[in-house]
Amino acid sequence: MKKTKVLVSAVLTLLAMPALLSSCFLRKNFVMATGGASGTYYPLGTAIAGIWNYSLGDMSVKVMATGASVENIRLLAKGEAQLAIVQNDVLDYAWNGTDLFEGEKIEGIQAIGTLYPEVVQIAASASSGIEDVSGLRGRRVSVGDEESGVELNAKQILEGYGLSFADIEKHNFSFKESADAMSAGMLDACFITAGVPNAALQELASASDIVLIPVSGAEAKAVCTGHPFYTKTVIPGGTYRGSDGDVQALSVKATLVVSASLSEDTVYRMTRTLFENLEKLGAAHPKGRDVSAPAAISGVTIYFHPGAVRYYRECGAM
Image 1 (cartoon, rainbow, N blue to C red):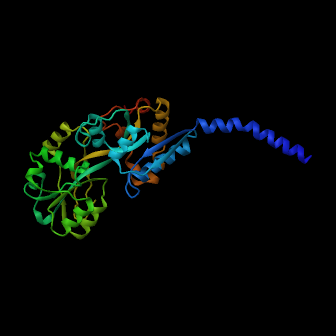
Image 2: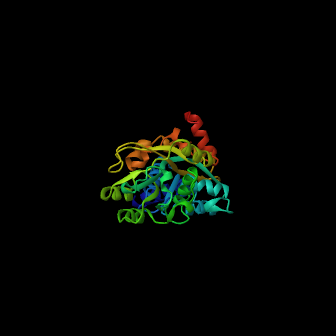
Image 3: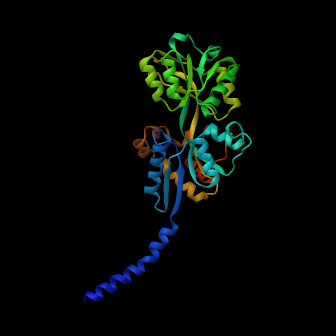
């Protein structure tokens, strides 16, 4: 009797093996390139991958910590990642082979959609008397790390006001270094492109009196016309200590992109599943609350993946 049970068990196992092997080999394994573990891209990407892995049984998405946008685009181009989160301005440079990707046009990448705004925040010390971008002329200004996306944001916004780096005392400091230098009286202003609120600016505002410099009117329109990846936004009053009123600003957007080699059906299912689970995404990460289908199609200057287009048309966003 015991031998019979063992034989039956073995037969059942053999019968089940084809299904198990089929499931294993049919599962689509993808890598999503994000950013540093302490930033926003990595935890938000982990939350997105979690939704897909739970809801789409035939897919497995592994999240990779990286150096963010520039590295992520190159990983996609080399086929070492199939999905990534990148800033839409850096994506535009790669698509057109300009600025950070001068002479290095990257192809084979398409968009799923934008996720949340990364606001170009311009902070000045209250004692500097600076009230608008034109007031940065001749002042000590940090424009972010050298050859960074922030530096290009600063360059483009200054140009909208008829200024260039030659018109300011330019410094290339990180966000934390910029805040420390302003607190020590060594800088008059700084540019920071990041989600709102930004930790370095929060720390600076808690220790020093600062003002946020608006980007608005004809100058903002000129910047957006020349660089369509910008969108107009507002930094809400109360975001930082001493900044009680809303401040007009420009933003680039964190954007979810994908290898153009992925099938329309795969990307359609990913896109639909993501937008059908925004409540879960918002619960997993605060920036998930900024994600919506109508907003996802703004600020994109490259082709959308056909699978994403199919979903947006289906839900009426496109």
